[in-house]
Image 1 (cartoon, rainbow, N blue to C red):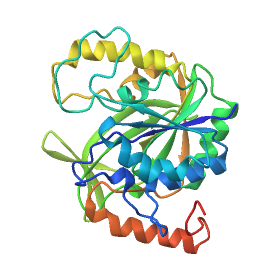
Image 2 (image 1 turned 45 degrees about the horizontal axis):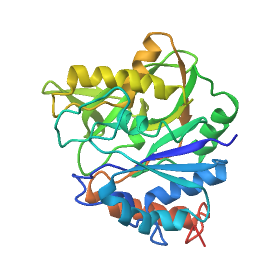
Image 3 (image 1 turned 45 degrees about the vertical axis):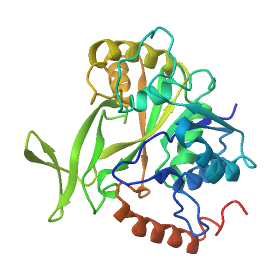
Length: 299
């Protein structure tokens, strides 16, 4: 059975100032998301599931869906603040989305096979899709998951701070913990993150999670359990979010799963800030010149 690619595309993009999920970046006007799907098709994925909001449905389907659907089966799942979840009768009022763990959970009914999760606005490189596809086909079980890890120094924006999940591993590259670090930037050649008002150093080769996960569908039950608990404990906090690593860390710490960290040497590209766009456009021009992508990838 071919694995499925889940793409988290419901984000608001407040720092970018627009719907960056569909903004043209490639030589043929492609969005970053299209290169990820092109890479996934080459690696042997069999279906794409987009997690979007109803408010962007028409624009998203016109600008992305119409280009993708002739090449791979596609499903759309809506992540809203009140998307029905079994066991939740009432959602507290809030404006901020519930987070990436909730985004995965809402696709429970449409994914029955091993699947990868990525962000719509991140470029992960070619090799990671082949690596994770092989894992999902051959090694993924109800208690064996994976993530693709990237070197921190290859994931930083020059135009502002970023947040990254720094991965800790054992000697066999099994994850022991993901720690969210915020306000990460490079200063005078050294990477720092801010913690309680102090600058704390990080290493260029620290492995970080860029939300490129490989899961067995058993994970949906775990996300469901934890989201119910999250609502009970944090539902009244309008700034709280239910992130994927919250569940992953719990499962690892309790010994319910093993999660292999698969190293990618590729450079990550993303557009956190609008000022990032020219650099990413130039990178895709270079990738096309190197022959890694055709100009106009769907032609």
